Image (cartoon, rainbow, N blue to C red; front, side, top):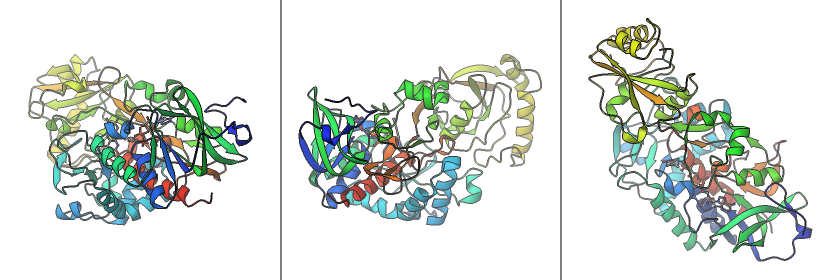
Length: 486
Ligand SMILES: Cc1cc2nc3c(=O)[nH]c(=O)nc-3n(C[C@H](O)[C@H](O)[C@H](O)COP(=O)(O)OP(=O)(O)OC[C@H]3O[C@@H](n4cnc5c(N)ncnc54)[C@H](O)[C@@H]3O)c2cc1C
């Protein structure tokens, strides 16, 4: 038997026998794989879905189940917000920053309302009620929250702000599990054949066409013929240190990878047949500094006592910009009117206190006139309702002038900076995997975090963008592969 691995495909001529034959083989049973399976079945294809764990889930089931949807949903309208396809699309593009895939933003911008209806049609419940304020995930069963930087500069200047985080109705954090359970049920109802404890190890090619996949099941290689194509839905690479070192070294500045398997195999399988991988240096990170809520009024400075961001942005954007700062830590400055004990989980500690900002500066061993000047400038303008440096907006823009004062340390190594990767295979809007020349690789599709999609830029990430990308472009891939000829 010739050598094959996730770096090297197996030629069809060398396949010893077929263990399974199907129209479509989907690899990975998180939200992406489930949505691809539902749509491929609906389009009439025979579908086999292979999952290396003993059941569905992946990172999708660990998530908050929050999906970024805009353009004027029933929940947005009921809460009194005006949102349009144009504003929503403009926000998506801005959030993609230098990594943006304009075609994906435009397609999802146009189709998001229909996608929301599709999710409801699958049985995903949305109560439709709005929870105001800066919320990471609702702790009650509210289903609409602000989940990005919509109301903050520069986003608010380009796209009219509206809350767009649509969370599955579910009490407390962790709506991802019920979301995946519902999608799994629909995939099963639709007749997808599901194989668990089945790990993809190599692709099979017929010339330049992907024709199947080698699966490891019961410690044996099984050869799967996929006559229409293969969909990769295996998640990102946050748990593959070698890949992170090669592609995403900045992520070593933070300490808490989150996800499930996320070993990058889908990306490497795609690369093994010529797929391009893009924006591999991008990652999402956040430290939960907006809990308790009063802390969201704070001011961040770096170790030189200088601000670096308008702190009313999404907590993840602020955290990602924090990680760009030198010195391995940043400080969150609060006065006594806005301080309460930080969340234990966050690992945020008190680094300095004082009755004046000069005293805090001294406790932090910063040169005199650095942090204190920052706060004098900030407070003077906050009293006038302005932030000339970063344009932070009310209600987060408040003077911090009630002694005593505190500097909380967000340390990239010891505080909880969770993170996951955003880079992956380059795909078209139908999920087709593209080579370096931008040409589709016949028979190969991918979606979710093994691709670079809507959440392409770590500094622009908003909560819900990953699951929006996984569910929507998972569906796109399922539909497109099902339409290919056998
Ligand atoms: C705690 C947490 C909270 C989050 N909250 C949100 C949120 O509210 N909203 C949001 O948009 N994003 C959220 N995210 C991010 C989001 O959950 C993920 O980016 C997204 O779910 C990835 O989905 P996926 O389908 O690409 O991968 P996954 O859901 O990880 O699915 C991939 C599946 O492929 C399987 N697999 C891997 N390799 C193989 C192989 N070789 N053979 C067979 N199967 C394989 C894995 O076992 C896994 O089941 C959160 C992430 C975490 C960790």
